[in-house]
Image (spheres, rainbow, N blue to C red):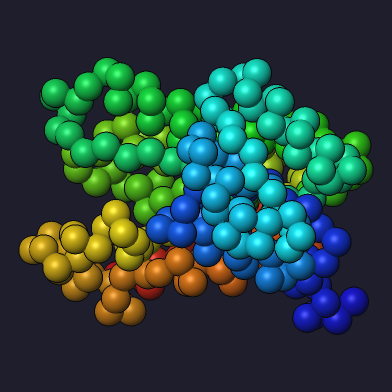
Length: 256
């Protein structure tokens, strides 16, 4: 197999959580997987996930959508069952991109926000990994990609639930890799740095945003397109000997 062929996802099937519109990072990762050849099932709690799949070309182009509450065991199980039916039982890639964020000082952090963030960012991720592995292990091959964060490495401020959840994503990724790598399942994570999205564009030009920009050796915030290459790499045969890794995509931030 030549090196370019190793990056191909032709004939592969992927489930991606957390993409319901074109404003987030998961949108670009879905595009990347599809352009490399994979069929995509998008799972999200928002009904907008159906609109996005149709906008991208729908079933004719290999984009499918299933509305799903990732935090509800029955809903998650049903979504995976439906996705596997669309894929004739073959699941090759899971990308866990669903996530929540809420800023508040720790002393007054709301209990409901804490539980919601941990449930979506960590617990739902684990159970999605579990469901994917049950489909992948009998075939002896699969790729699981979790979305971590720079806060997997440091705690930041005023985001205690998010930091705790993303620290957990790092350790969960390693723990699952330790169990499943010998069974043919590579489990890795991408840790995006400060990324420009519709949710953060108003922050970039603030004093805090400029402080963050000043620490990024690349001199700019990242964009969805900056995650596309590493996504395809981790989903493809090119990364068959990479497992348990958390790969920062941060413009050099952590090395500063």
